[in-house]
Length: 215
Image (tube, rainbow, N blue to C red; front, side, top):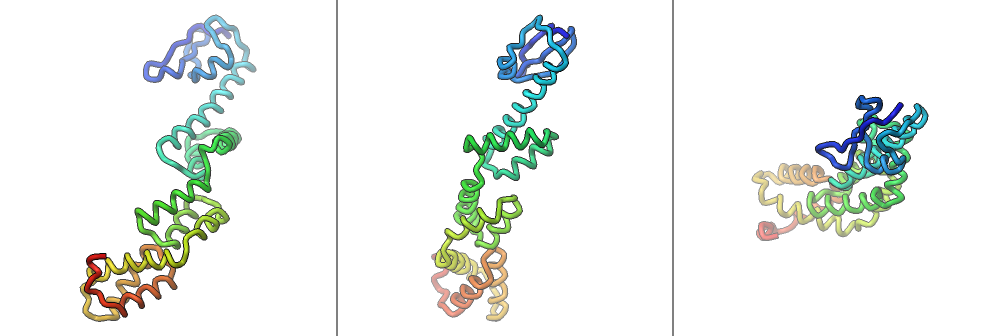
């Protein structure tokens, strides 16, 4: 087999089309071209071709991971599942994941810290809902528990109180029990633990509400 033509792709100058015996054979990244010193007129055998293609796939898996992470931060499980969906070889996926972690592009601890911070400050989630979301993402429970433990009970109750204080004036029920149920359900829905909600509701309903709109 002889390489008879090498051309840059029109839409991606980092990739090249390789022709063998005057027929299109495959596409590779420029890094693979350089690695194997491929050139027009080079004669190759099946074993060498398989080595090229395997190296190209290995590079493709890694580059796909970089592409995903450049769009938004993701945890290891999210990257792994997306790679599997693309049909990449499982061993090559493992190798790419290891490399991404070694280079600190992929870090579940850092991801967990950022996720918790965003869900507290932006989404206003309680600890229970944050935990559930992280579990669904495939973060290890050990990492989750370690990072969640940094949230103090006092801070959690204060956040629940402020959210409840803003919600209470919008509840138009006159009946105290119905007001309590709606406020309780609202805070549970935001993801706060049951004991936090119970204390917060009790605290709010035993307070004066005139200034809640200003909180």
